[in-house]
Length: 449
Image (cartoon, rainbow, N blue to C red; front, side, top):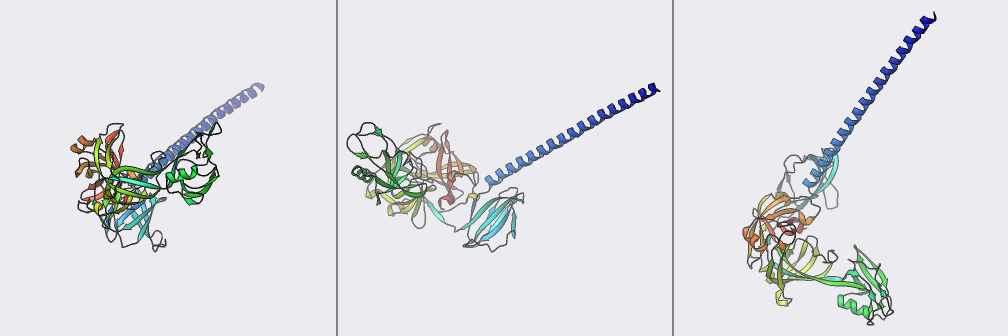
């Protein structure tokens, strides 16, 4: 009887052990299955994120933040992106007279916009027609023609007040070095008033500090678009003159190229702003003058060393071409006089909008040997929404004659008009340091903004 029980218990124990093993195998299979599912989900999520990221990049680089279209015309766009756009008509008061979602377009297909006279449009771009991605302004502009110029110009710009280049220390009469302006002024500041009176220039500023008698000075400065007062107490240097330990500049000069003259006698030049050589900040100008200049020498560009056109500028009244009224990141602008208007010998051309530009042959108009003429280039890339407004067009010089004289694009050529298929599409702005045959340009519509 005991033996039978023992055998029964043994069988039972074996059955329990087998059941445990089976249960363990089953649990392992369940864990593996869950792991496989988790890995599959992770792969799918990563794939979706990668697809979305690529699509976001594709959409962001393929569609500009602002599209300009001509008034009373039909404009064709071919963006070819996996997105849809919802159009609203924005009035001058910022209100829409089109219900949200009432007009949708498939941006993966070619489309045609029929524009009115002055209405501006707003388009909400949705990735895959679902995910809100980007607001695109559609601006209706009047069509116009511009005279391409391509002539070298001398530039003189006077700042508003004085620009602070930097601060430093100097030896004082009391033995030792002092730096009164340290931690009060910084590079890029504009000193526009001293003790409530406007600063007219560098000499005026230095003279008034030297004659201050050691009294604390109140400087009205502009920094990052904000204006406020700071106080500095000058110290005597070893010669007995009062100083605050600051280097300042009140003007800038250089050579560039005039881009266009419009029907009202206004000009645009450079295609980029005038920045201070030391602080790299855009110079805030009080006034400026354009001068006639001649190129006296050219240093050819080479890999790692940009070339340069050197011009002779004579600052006399009979050489003045006009007044510079604005210095912006898109170029310098102003009013031509009769002498400057005579430089516009080329036929006026219609502007070409960014969406009309194509990769391929084009020309630039410039003066490198005393004669203003067209030279062949190739447009290699078009960035409809580049972070840098001055680099919307990538180009390469292909003209053998220009290459033999300059090696490609050189300093001083900034502003040279870019023409493609009879349309004025942009202006040269920069050269690639490692390859002087290549460079960048700004869209003409951006200069006209």
